[in-house]
Length: 240
Image 1: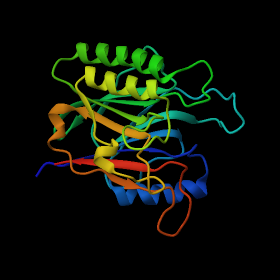
Image 2: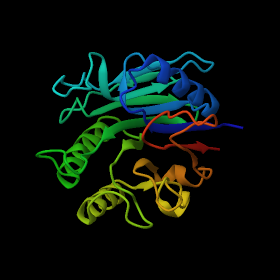
Image 3: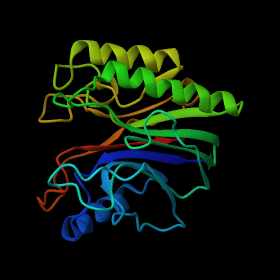
């Protein structure tokens, strides 16, 4: 039976060798075929079985104390062949590639959308501009399916956790416009953060794939030994 697993995780800088060791251990346990890592670093890469390829956003500007050389907002790692598609709007906070998966070619677009104190940026403006890149990329090659994933910085459904109402509406409307379903929304995950809230890190995929999606697999900030891996939960979905 064909099977593919997609995961996204904000790994909170991903530049500590000791923390990366436990992050990689968790990644091996999840055993995804495509990883969209956000707030990551060149030194963090999967070591699970298989030959891995990757593409990344441009290096983060070193304009904040914790930003080190090699830091990236987005890195896409995959066991499948991948072809870089360069975003024209924001090559620092987004990355994209066409992945030759077992279920057909898939345009994977990784992103980090603005947070509350992200000066001069709003989720509504950024997702509108980023979606122009989706359109151009899809028009350049017919028959592609689309997956948009990463740190959306909004919860989608359930009790309010993070993100302004207009930001959530903009994400919902833009995904709907492109025939995408957020398969990590509250309806599908339930209360996975602090026993009450939904995720702010999401995987949205073309409706054609939705019937093949198994229930999301969410893991917490700490591993089973109580070691802190990140300040975000991670999530994966399997396509059967």
